[in-house]
Length: 178
Image 1 (cartoon, helix red, strand yellow):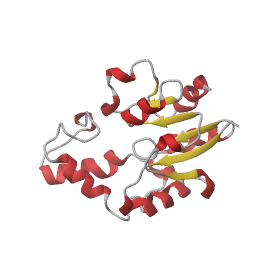
Image 2: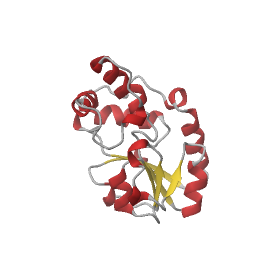
Image 3: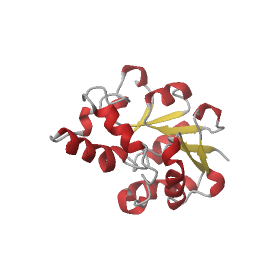
Image 4: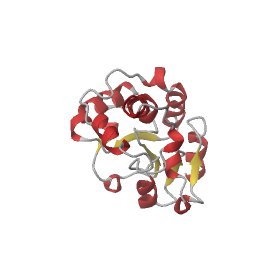
């Protein structure tokens, strides 16, 4: 059976919309748009990286969220993928929130054996990765990656990759690679 690996943050869990942007707005005293996040490290917004990483270190970061409530399209997309493939959650957590992320992924319907928390996604055996991180996508190559569209991954190096513009698009894009 083919294996599809799905990233958590900004793919399953809209971390910027739910956690980072409200915190940035509060701390910076102005509205902040997701479109302003044009790179992985928030460098386009002065002071944003430190604020975001402060949030990422919360040990209960994911505890109050349920995928069906925050992203029902993702729940539906996962259900479709699971009819044809083994679906793994593959994510690189910060140490402080790893347990919270694990619990969230289990609430997303991933079995204990289908959650992989690691520092290097290249070590995991899968056929296709669905991810928003430019470096992870580049590491896997365009034959094995569906880029989950975000402002920070609209870079020239990812032109020609399958790109999903939301969860209703993911199953079709994965099928094109498999």
